[in-house]
Length: 112
Image (cartoon, rainbow, N blue to C red):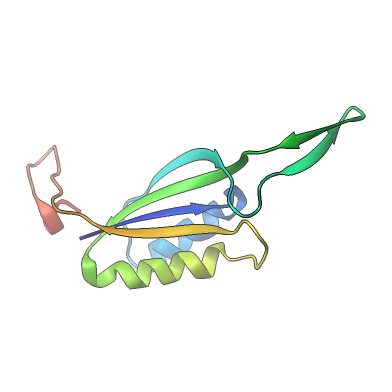
């Protein structure tokens, strides 16, 4: 099993959700987060005053999939989240040792 963590632009969330559903992903955890990378924030003007925004709003997705479907899920995220502009986000893939569905006690792939 693989844990896919994707940090994307907030307005791309619905497109990514639809793309993941199309490749068979059944569950996603979504968190609103803030951060920066190479983009390093930006400046804005509010009521005539300029100020720096160092942490930009992003959406963090966490998805656990079987090992054989991880590449399809990653490809779906990349295609749906890409704008070609700086700040499109990142995807991290790690291994999951064990998963348990609390309600039924099912484990590992059966728990997904």
